[in-house]
Image 1 (cartoon, helix red, strand yellow):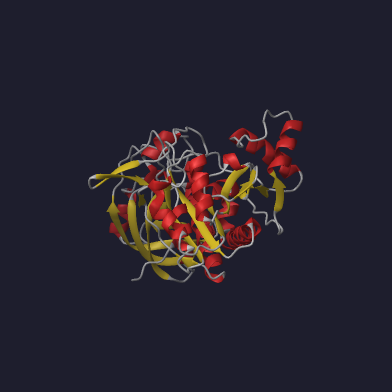
Image 2 (spheres, one colour; image 1 turned 90 degrees about the vertical axis):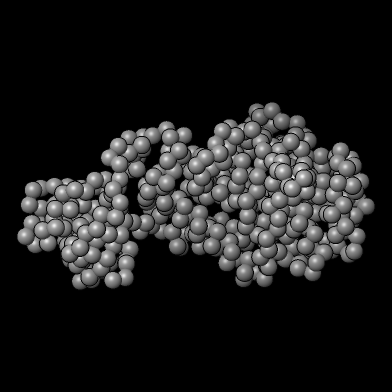
Length: 430
């Protein structure tokens, strides 16, 4: 018999449902247990004399989190979850669980975060945590759908690279045969190189790595980045238009497809109107100073400053907003400069930077001068600069932290809740 998920069963069906034992209740001649799979729970009811004796006996042997397979009839039951129950004809105990669980799967007894991540595969049996991961999966699905409709080509750039897009001490070195290489900080350099290839609109989803020794709720050492790059742009405005359209498309998709998950988590998605609010860096500094925040023109925005700005913007009705015209000195070498300011942009959501990018510098001689000014050796980036020597069109793009977006959609306390097996300065396993 073909397996069904619990949510797919209908009254009158004969079905096989597989999952884990969530709860057992024994009333002597009447025994119940809840079988949980990734779509929900279904009650299994065994009445002595109404089910095979071997099945009735096996129900007595069940413990929490045992892995079972049940075949039987689905019948109407007003007191059962969903108004239905299974009357088992066949019950197979596929795998017994140890009786002393290291964490409480349903969180009634609160476990420490480190303990939960030590036993992450158990932790994720909690339906609320599964709901978080479903929201993340759906967000990525609709981001992919947006780029397909918008005519972008999906690409995959190398994870092992000779140099980092950001440089500095935040790169993870790896032994690459007899040479030193690095895990990518960003697909940035390769996206730009592709703008010279004729693939003038590209995007990708992939892991990036940052060797930053932060111990905060918003930083991890490995995360998923959604990146796009497009050529033949007139300014960074073209990049903001693409990015905000992608955001709204994905938010609408999640609101439509994840109604049950959002209800379980007690969240409602607000769809912003386009265009999103634009605010210049100069105006940000002015606002922060007026509110008593210490900041000087030319400083990059720190977490606490971003949070304060988010509070002020939210009061004005803007959960999502762009910060534009950043000082040249705080942006990477590949962002086009325009005197003291740059054509770099950030997209913030509820006081957290979700995306960063802008218009890139496409003139090779200017690019080399900026690299030198920022203390970089252009000779180490010949593989990258070569792409600018044979006809590079004006272009721009962004890197987008999808896990940060989901964290903020659901107002979670920590980005690590959105990541199956988070990597931090202190965590390498499981």
